[in-house]
Image 1 (cartoon, one colour):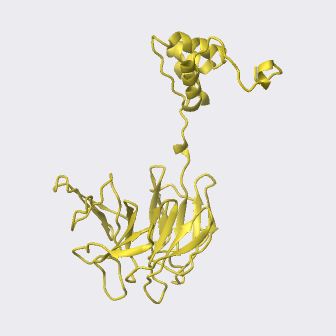
Image 2 (cartoon, rainbow, N blue to C red; image 1 turned 45 degrees about the vertical axis):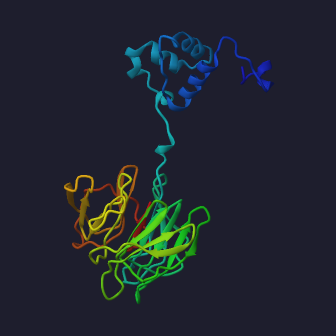
Image 3 (cartoon, rainbow, N blue to C red; image 1 turned 180 degrees about the vertical axis):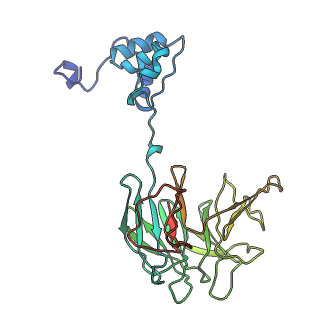
Length: 311
């Protein structure tokens, strides 16, 4: 009717006879999500509407249930935007010569390639990374000579780094995570000793304030939000913290005060995408030894260790 030179093809409004609003809505929904609810009250109108609109998949799929395994097509498969994977970014790190890097590379799972993007404004390794509101925050780090207070954010749409208010204390090998729209920076190393202090950043005010310090000094740790809780071994901040010490994860749930889990981790930057973990760069303790326990991704354009990974 709409693909031929019939009268309805040029009309702004078309009256579909013997087709109710509810029936049309369900058929359009089936075209997008591949699901259709059939009941005793709507089966007749759905079958008539599907036949009228030539949606044979809907009609056949429900009229001949015993033949469903043989009637599969792209129209009977659920589709949703969650199938689109996210991008990953390898940020900074050390070159093979031991020099700090400012370069950034982006990995697209659809093209399976790493592409250079805008470099940071400063060289740094052991930099803290957090992602919020489609922006990547690079915090502190080490430039090869000194620990840094510098903070900057990367906007993917503009492909540019923008300066952010600096930390109150220089630090590298820090842990960072966003929670309740605020950035928490925990621990780290200032060039002399590991730190126990916590700094909290408010993006709306572009200001830092001191948070509750940890009970122990820690560097090369990690923090994460889990199930809406921020878990901490030292203090419950409404939620709890997950801390990663070297290659150890310790999870302390304040709900039970008893549950604790420890797992060994590899000392490499990582991120998750599509329910899978990605490990990028790093240094092999045994050159030439092949470890085939992961599916390889395309190689980076620049060899680097002690880099940060964001997704």
